[in-house]
Image 1: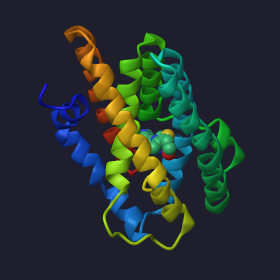
Image 2: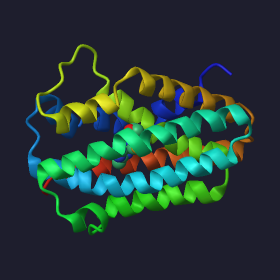
Image 3: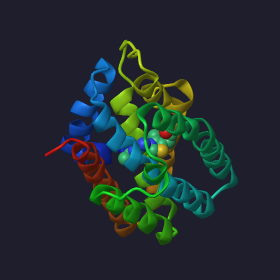
Image 4: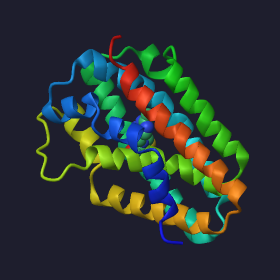
Length: 217
Ligand SMILES: Cc1ncc(C[n+]2csc(CCO)c2C)c(N)n1
């Protein structure tokens, strides 16, 4: 096979992928000019996203075909449930987010749709489907935030979010995820490949609507 499965999926979804990685939200975060109300909406909804995301990681750990990937995925799960969790809490404090909005906010449509997609991938109990969604949730964030030579903005709410998605550990993890999707993709029949590809495409579309929806219409 000439092209990597993970690369072909990115190319197939090139337009929405680019719309995300060059989104106004990312540009304004790098510039430090992001409106606090926009960041607050984003983080409140994203905190609910992370919850299902950890469940999806658990499903990937359960459905993996070998011990080695289970170890890598478990180590990653440990990172997001420690470092990343404290980022949210400190940012909620800095932005004055009410207790109810931290734990039981009114969920927006893209958040509900994302939660449903992650649950669907998890319940399929198919490792390739879980990897496809993870490759979007992680790979798209790496491509969006890992900008060559870009300076970090002054406020920690902006700078730490960028750094969480642009550091050597995260780069290594995304490279591993992409290689893992390639490896598992090789062994799939055409129908199972198409199923994983469909999860990938739906996840990219949802990432775009998630970025869009934190701005007022
Ligand atoms: C809508 C949405 N999509 C993807 C991510 C990215 N993401 C979620 S968990 C995780 C692991 C470590 O940060 C990453 C990269 C996000 N935050 N919000």
